[in-house]
Image (cartoon, rainbow, N blue to C red):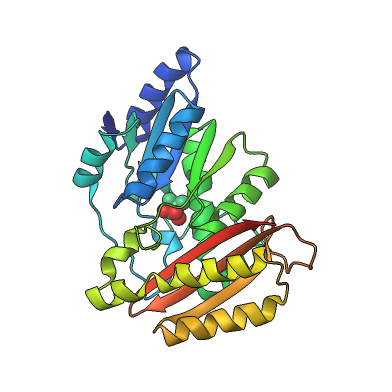
Length: 282
Ligand code: PAF
């Protein structure tokens, strides 16, 4: 497996793959990889002969006071882990490779509507940073397929919309959320939790699945279910940012007949922001 940092090294390798008509899948990451990322790599391999994992802690998607400086940079450990997977190449560009005119002069990509609520409301500018960097990575890598995790449900919807709206020649694939045995969704940020917080964290998934069962059992009093789940999470010591039942395809408020729902939640546990979701097909 190769590790490349520059645009030129990367282009040389991809040109060789393309000569053999090989398809390229991209798994964009910010590193500090866990089993959830590794499962996306295996999924990517099912869709293309060559798998590129990008590792880039993107400054433009972190707000003021967020954890950009503390975000774990673990390229050596990530490389060791990826060697055990189907990944062919790690692309770990420098900031000026991704933003050649500098961050303040960068052309940005912004998806309206879908980014206004939930994580978009709580983290202003976050999704503009995500779409801007993903569009740039698509430009650099030119993948046939790109794989994102369902854990960031709103993010994968926003990226799908961007790719469709901009006619980007890439298929977006979403890989399932991988969980600890107690249900906590794997996340690079789980390493911030202390022992006591870690013990409380599974409450988020428990609240989601409990609402999921209620929906499967025909309950449609969405706002009552949301409020009850918020109370349950507060009682478990989580500071709820949002808990919402929405139409899975576009996060619109669902009507009673909607048969594909997503239950999305975000909560703060100490300094750590947890997000999770489940999709319910009724
Ligand atoms: O989900 C992430 O890790 C990031 O938002 C992404 C998609 C790699 C863009 O920086």
